[in-house]
Image (cartoon, rainbow, N blue to C red; front, side, top):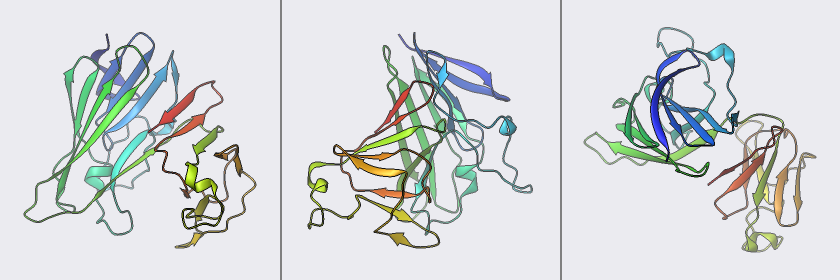
Length: 237
């Protein structure tokens, strides 16, 4: 049975720990409501910068880009800046065995409040997260869900290419190279050539740091995997 507890972690008090026999998750309500640890047998898949330990957002001071398992709302190029959601202090509460909820403040710029509910499986490393966008304004809002997980570096990313996208240059294949690369600048490159990205046996493989880190994938599979040097494979859906 998964359990829930309150712990201090990376200089932050009142973090919530979800734990079963082999897996552990640490949730921090400081710095935007994020995942600080997602570990299997003590090996954390999340990258954390120790120089950021204990950091808290202050609108009068310079900001950082916090590490961890991050979620947000977008689209990023049109949504108003919302540092209270991305960086500000949230509240955290236990909601059951192996389950917790992180709640943001009501954000005036976007008109919404974000709620993230986490559940760790009783017997496996499966962690589910549901983000709820709650409109507290007097008008209709159109925002999308967004996620970014900073994992341990130096691994290999594997994305399954769905059946129709393996047929090159057809109406069903959006990208000739099975991916596009964003940048440099406000450009989407539909014909990138990067030695660290290849197609093999129906999968797109990123085997090293690409020239530009932001990519679009030709896949409807709904999942990808990241194989790390600490002998863990992190699967995200």
